[in-house]
Image 1 (cartoon, rainbow, N blue to C red):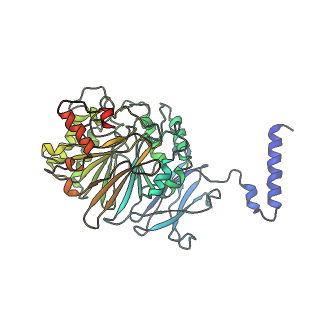
Image 2: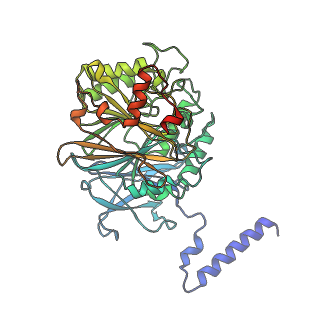
Length: 474
């Protein structure tokens, strides 16, 4: 008898022995090959009457999502079955509709008609509110499991209890032109133990940046961009991706009375080393036209531009909006000329926490705030702390990994409070408070919002001195 036959005989005898025990269900003897979830579940973007759940399963099976307002599933609503197959790397997104708004629901998956015995307890999440309502949105970028396999920040994230999580790119570090490597990193990242409970209850939406698009600083010439996009669609549960005739990961998402505009800064990007000018683009003509149309149509008091790279000029020589300022300023001019209020940005990539401002009030518009959280799970970086953007509202934060948190409220009028939290759950600096009246043409606010020490640096630089003097400024 060969070794393969020995192993098979041993497994068979073990299964028979287990089935004969009075306290072990006979079905447990047949667990080998049982249809199950390999990675996930992860909650996707909800609506007021729908929840969405992503999962990667163990074979070509029909996957059904069941939701109930009670943990015992006395009342059940089920999704249509979604077939997992090799084309989507056996990833599925199932959606249950007909639910009540702003309501917590328990959920579970049936795979090939059976409940997943490896995850027997149901999870819970909630639907979106209908109309304006207070909510929290977390965001961050740069999760590199090759550097940080513990990823302590997600314990902090779960304790903050946001309703939404925006992943701003470099969500994995594939750094490869091989689609199999990208898929492998997605799977491994979803296995991070601290991450699992967070994404099982908190809705995740994502864009990409260079390291999950292909290589560092990769652009629209990426030869596997179609394959990278297909994998992105397989491994996330965004509400939509691009336009019918224009591929990409950009989309608009509305929650609690706030509009989020998720931008794709990679698929159509002109190389960073091309001289800046009217033809140099990060977004591409179609995405930019889409963004302008959606901003003009929005009636939300806050409109959030969700970007991989920062909007300010802090990262000189990098691949952020600092080297696409002609296109950036074109968008800013459009916002001003069409009297579109309430716009600010969130971004990542720089491996440090930042709160910057482009003082557009000097051009008859309003000051554009750029809120940056990075890294979620990587080494903080000191490369750019001595580089001055247009205005730094808060000092750079480089002491640990971090995550940004947006608190929106409407009780006494629309208001936003932004705080950056470190890996221990402590705030990095005083929060930024904004209202729609701060974000309308002709209003200057940055001098009232800035930390006094940063104002000293800014004024010293304007007078011809150095921006960064470590011994004086520390």
